[in-house]
Amino acid sequence: MAKEKIESLKDVKEEVKREKPEFVSETHLTNLQRLVNSVNALQYNIGKLEQQKHTLLHNLSVTQDRIGIFQDTLEKEYGTFDVNIEDGKINYPETASNKSNEK
Image (tube, rainbow, N blue to C red; front, side, top):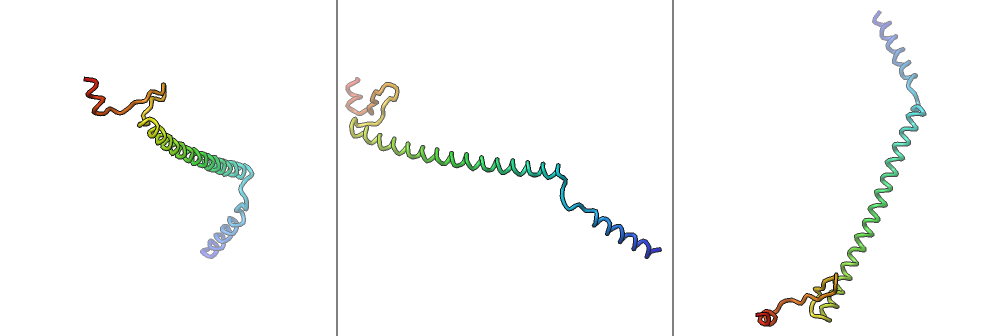
C-alpha cells in the first residue's frame, strides 16, 4: 500500500508539472504591458523635465553673471550699482560728508 501511495504521488506530481501554463493569459499580458509602458513613459517624462531644469538653471547662472558685469558698469559710471529698478533713482551710499550736510 505504501508503494501505491508513492506511485500515486509521483503521478500527481507529474500531472501538476504538465498542467503548468507556459504563458500568462492575454488579459494579464495586456495589463502587464500597459503597466510597463506607463513606467517607461513616466521615466521618459521625468528625464525631459530634468533636462529642462538643467537648461533653466544654466540660463539663470548666465543671467546672474550678466547682472554682476552690469553692476560693475553701473559702479564705474555712477559710483554705485544700487538703483531702484522701478524709477531708476540712484541710491548713493551715505558718507560722512552727506551726514554732516544734513545736520
